Image 1: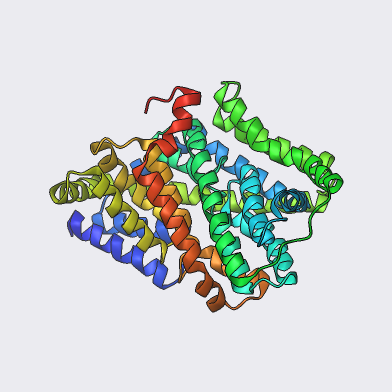
Image 2: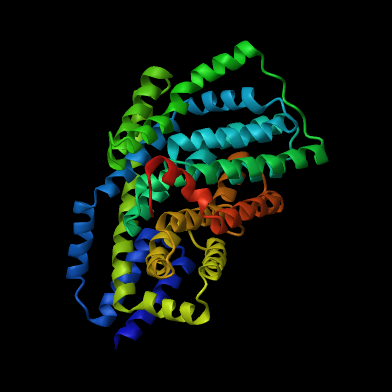
Length: 433
């Protein structure tokens, strides 16, 4: 059998792992193994290259460190401090708890960099509070899912670290580039909530007195300082992004144990277990990504796609449109981690050929992938919010369409107005692209 047949077998196996619902990391590796078996090629060189990737790419080390920090922040009552601060800040507006939901996610994203951590940590508290004040359960879950997508967009961000490893783009520039889109998404969702709250006559939450608000703010300061410490450290050159991950983990631990006194020994053991599990899964995914990148290069998949695209259009904005539509469709059916490690290596050479800035491209792709987490029928955040609240999934799906439209509008802005992403890196870092 020739190589093209091996590629066909690889693609068929790749589809089959989703049909059979195999664990995604192991399924991806299985597809790669079948490729080598059919092609007759030795996987020795690829295995060596994969190990070299782990040994020499220090950016990868930041991934388990940020995962650890997210688990620590999500393990205790840190979420209560963030929720209380957000309540005092925006709870007094019409549909106050909806605004609280979004603002709390924005603050929490600066500590975890994970949409799943946001939805599962803050989510139940937010949905329960909204239910108690008479909000529709479907609306509460939909807003919780949509706001959780801010997590990997606003720094720090685990997907940005992985994208940096795959593309070579600056982690610091990616972090800085995600700030404006993250805030823009939060504002857009709050505008949507404002109109829905008036249409459905959702309540204004009880106004928090100044003294209570100051107490909430004081309690939230250690948590709010997390992204400030990391970004200042990175952009002043005091620490690398990987060292920032270590500082984030240590700082989160100090805040949870000594600041808030919410993390006990049993909780800490569970944090370590969860971190090891997540790191194992991520490591296998990265290993699979390295192998798939080799297959893509060997079979000249990227070159074939690039030839087709450049024959179809020489306009980078049309290319962006095609990429966005493709990722949006894939996001309906495929896990975002698969999109990142499988399709980004294919798209990167084409983006470079079109002269697209890799930081800008990375933010567009990551933002688009996060939309996939809330997109029916298989959006992970829809299942999480439905599960933790006991709300029927159909009710969540019914309410998610307008938040999705809101997110798509923001995606269009950051896609076709690159300065929304690149303004801060250029101004504060001297980033030249």
